[in-house]
Length: 163
Image (cartoon, rainbow, N blue to C red; front, side):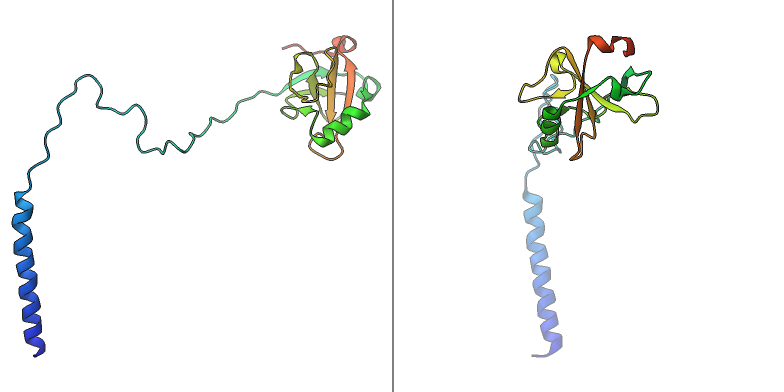
């Protein structure tokens, strides 16, 4: 067989297949029309293109840092070191929930992180070492040199800055 006859046979086969497929496509019935619900049931209650196994993105947390104490003298004279709580802070078992969410300042000092023993405000304390009458001051919480200082809340009332 020559090259010309093979091409002619192939062209004939393709033409025959196209003619056979044409009527088959035309004989298919049209899709039935959907009844008009009219009651709002036509919409899905969720976005169907989102995979339900994937959690929706959470909104960006909004928080306002707040200065709660301003000391008129160096704060180390007002606060006492608690060695046991400092050890727990280094182990991650006595920390602020949000570092530096509440702050305290002394003159020419870097900010201290503050947490309250009463109602455990901004305090992570799974071992329940807190005292309700104390205020806890954190220096270097996210380091291996975390130090916790304490002071009685009644002694600090003069330095408190209200909302």
